[in-house]
Every structure is written in structure tokens, then in C-alpha cells.
Length: 124
Image 1 (cartoon, rainbow, N blue to C red):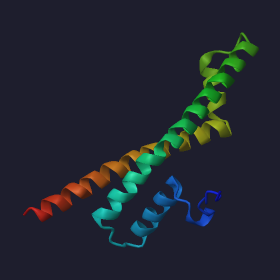
Image 2: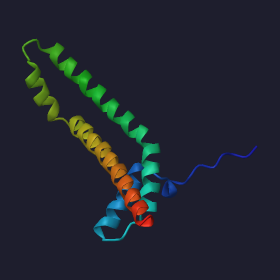
Image 3: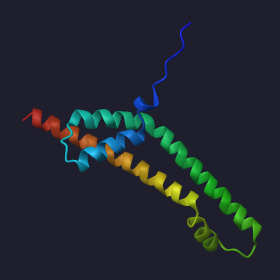
Image 4: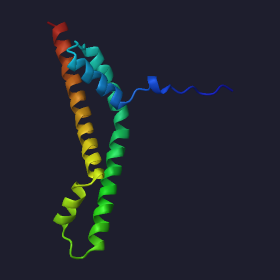
């Protein structure tokens, strides 16, 4: 029986590699055709589940910390706990993850627009 080959880390396609590649192309003013946009969007859609799962994990962790903080001190109000939470590294990571998902969503939207433009160009 042959062992299933796994892609090497350097050839692994991730959300970050796709977004970083397109960011580099944009900053270096390279023209990106609609086919590349659509192909990247398809990959992002396939990979987006992992990103949303990660966000849900962050959100659950933050909620549990809030509950512990509120239960630990009856005198703390929700606003004070919220402020303390927002000062944590975990909060920052959660917000970065939210922004990343928004970036993916916008990327997919732009890819659709690119495809529509291309289709319109082909049909006159």
C-alpha cells in the first residue's frame, strides 16, 4: 500500500498565502486577470470554514472569560468587564480574525465583479 502524499509546506495553499499573493500583486501594480480572481475566490470559499471555526473559538473563549470575571467579583459591571476584555491579546486576535473574514468576503465579492466585467466585455 502506498502512503498518501501530503503537500509540502511551501506548496500548501492557505487563506493567508492567497491574500498575501494578491496583496503583493496589487502593491506592485501587477495586472490580475479575472481567471485568477475567480480561481482564488473558489479556493477562499473552500478554506473559509476553517477561518470561521477559528473565529467562533475566539468568541467562545472571550465569552467564557467574561463570565468568569463577572462571577469572580459581584461588584464588577458588564461595562468594566468589557473594557478589561478589550485590553487583552485574545480580544485583539479575535478582532483580527473578524477582519480577515471580512477581507475574504470582500475578495469574493470583487472576484464576482471581475467575472461580470469580463463576461460583459466578451459579449459586447
